[in-house]
Image 1 (cartoon, rainbow, N blue to C red):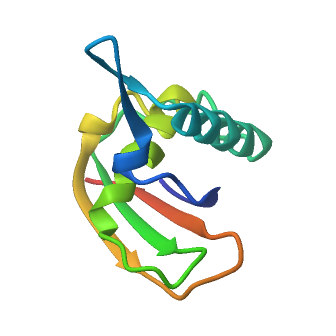
Image 2 (cartoon, rainbow, N blue to C red):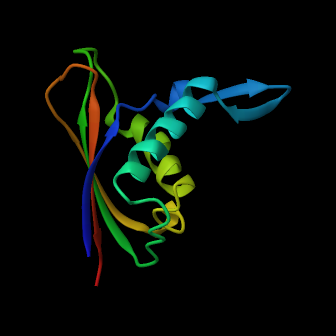
Amino acid sequence: MSYKFELPWPPSVNGYWRTFRNRQIISKRGREYRKESIEVMQSLGLCGENVSRRLCVRLKLYPPTLRKYDCDNFTKAVFDSMTHAEFWEDDEQVDRLTIEKCEKIKGGKVVVIVEELE
């Protein structure tokens, strides 16, 4: 089975976490991203999919600006959203991950391609 869908542009891992009372918590921006992503996944019928197999994931990052960025800083928000949407059991299932930087587009987006491994 394979899946291909688009999610909104995520906050980087640097903007995803905040320290509050000596604890690491998800920032307001991170919580808003999670909510928006889950709404998108609900509209696509992907919430509660509960994929349980080992997975290969490909992320295609289309940033909203020409600013330089580390492509590995964006997986956490995307994966956490997918976990909270119950698309899969846990992002621990991902055995292979490819991240591709793509051209800038207005608003930015992430194309997510998930394939079950044999």
